[in-house]
Length: 386
Image (cartoon, rainbow, N blue to C red; front, side, top):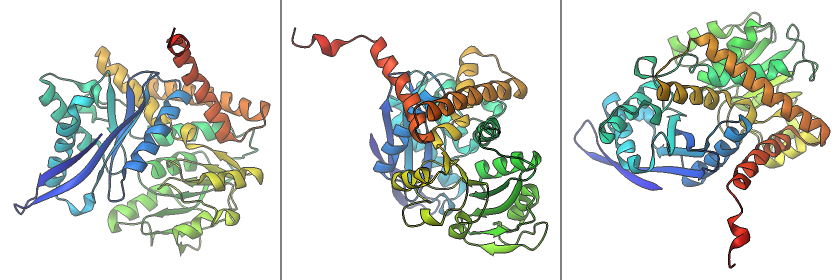
């Protein structure tokens, strides 16, 4: 579904923004997926992301199908009032197609809790009743859940920690490079750093820093708040500025792409020196590069497993909204940890038993569940023409 959102700007002019919402598959339940605001959003991207969400929900064994939405916009060029009008206009355009039992929205790139709160408020106004379960990722005061802020990063962290023995990772000596220092990259760095992993490189859209002696994620984030970027932050030793491309090619045990899609392709995959790639962004490794890296023995923990912590906790928010009973952060994290470890172990077992890459094992795992849900509905195609 597509719509053009006509927004009144602060200077009185009008601007049109292209927007989309895609529901890829609802065989396991109502579709679920975020809404991203980005100048490069396109229909093809939204369709691909909704496909990934379908498998991500199946991998995490959630009662959801996959959906995704987006608006082609540079949010940095909008005032707060303009951004609010755009957020509410998106819901107004797609309200007939969304809802707690049909299509559930959530935050994504450049749609934070404030944006989601505007969307949730607009949906409640249109529906004529409080409908908190139609949109997840809300602020706590608006029916959100404890543990949602760091859920995506924490899910990837639980996955990596569960695989430590299998991957021969020692937290006291392992090195990590993180591309992307937004919410996911920051919390992933913070959690791993607290457990002894040495964070040697961090980058954001403006470039990065490298220090073989290690970086403190909290200090780097403080520097980013003060200056607008990570460049210039100091580490434990000699800190050098690097580009995003250079960060990907560093020698390290774990590379964490937590920024945009297709950062590792055939053009640079031969220069990737990390032994393990933990995909915290959606689709950071192209299919061609994935095959080549896997054939070379490098382990890629795929996005549909590694970053499924966000949708797992979003499911808990949906459940809490529907029941009216809310959990504390320890219960949310315990549930997330159990889910991530259970699905990680199942996929690692498939990886070994069927001699598959981790990505192929994850898709096999998810596809089996989708197929089971299709088969459980009966076999109408068998009777066509009878």
